[in-house]
Image (cartoon, rainbow, N blue to C red; front, side):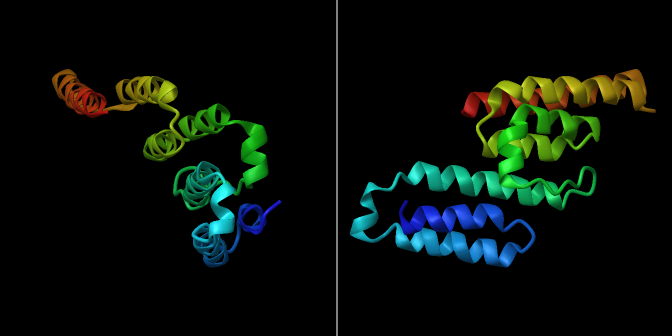
Length: 147
């Protein structure tokens, strides 16, 4: 195990102190610039950083605050965490998680749940609901076309 991997592993364990986690990740990023680190897979670093960003956002979510560690997240699986976010109607965080962790196969699940809850709980008129849904899906269509 390299020093970079040690730093990454330590950062995944540091879930309560974000400044320390950031420092560890910056140090690992700096260590990657040395020639001996050329054998290190940068994708591992990127994936861990993205996951830690999602976990930090999850801890600070106003709707669905959960202190899940990196190892718990790995065992619990992303789909189950998404279902938890949907139960608490934290759609923005669910979409952030999908974008950061490249889980586009679950995007339809989030939009489906959002639409169902919007229709069930909205006080808006039928035409206003239709317009809101059309706007949202037009934005989604544009976003998908860009990718």
